[in-house]
Image (tube, rainbow, N blue to C red):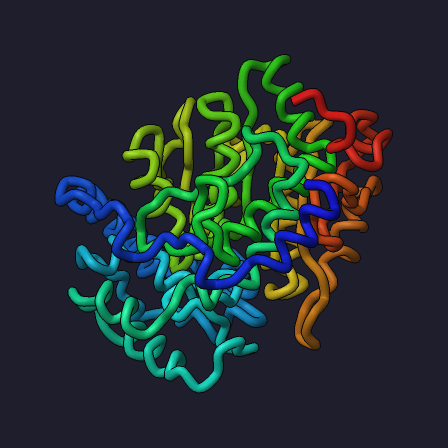
Length: 400
């Protein structure tokens, strides 16, 4: 968008002029889809309930295998019961604030943009009980989507201005998704953040490298530690389709969200939950792995072409980040790379850059003129890879 048009856009954009996608506009899960979720939830419940016994039986380090640092206060070691009701799964996104943003109230709780709206009380109320049947009406009466997200419009326009259509993130209109309706996609802080990550992968040369890997080997495999509710895995799978296999590794308490989100949005095809003494499928679309099972299955999870972590390494302990850094090195192909988006933003945060640098000698901070990204995105590797490190901005001069 030329600068004069961009400035004009900023001037004329008002909340009243913005189209929105509300809770009412979502596609609801069918009864059959909900029924197919229940065995998956039961499997995740077993992974959670049996975690400490498995860890102790295998002689694993509890300090690495259980939630630590910031997550230690967020995730109880026992007695957590995963929700199975239709509404709780149908509106899954309303209980998944993985970047600190609460979609239910269209705001953060730590840095309120709209204070004094009773949002904190509503978040607590929904956390303590199931999503009510009249949630659509409750939300429509209390929160104006356009008003609360109007500030995102200009940022999102900049994010996608020079990005080819095939790399523009489009979230499934399910699970309670809400946002601005812009260029045919739903935009909110979660989807905008996901777009910035796709932009970073594009600008850093990682997406081009994955295409090259697929051209050579027929498919590529990625492993993401801490996939949140599954936004990035969904976006990457939408780009590469059946040529990409995605391994999602997380605490069982968080794996609940990504497993349901990705399994339902892909209609269950090619989605598998790994359990102790199980077997890694020869082919899959999404494979969900509890963090403490990595040692047992490491040999069959690799080799991988790309390892990913975004915004959760600093929240872990140093021992945990070191474990994952070594696991990445162990599972990556010789020409595999790590993409991470992390930084030290709070006093308790771990400097994951220092830990990764001790394992991966080659490092590039991602920056882009065309595909706006976050300035804390990086690419790491154990060896010099020309298609990554020879170019400072792989988003320049793209033909697509």
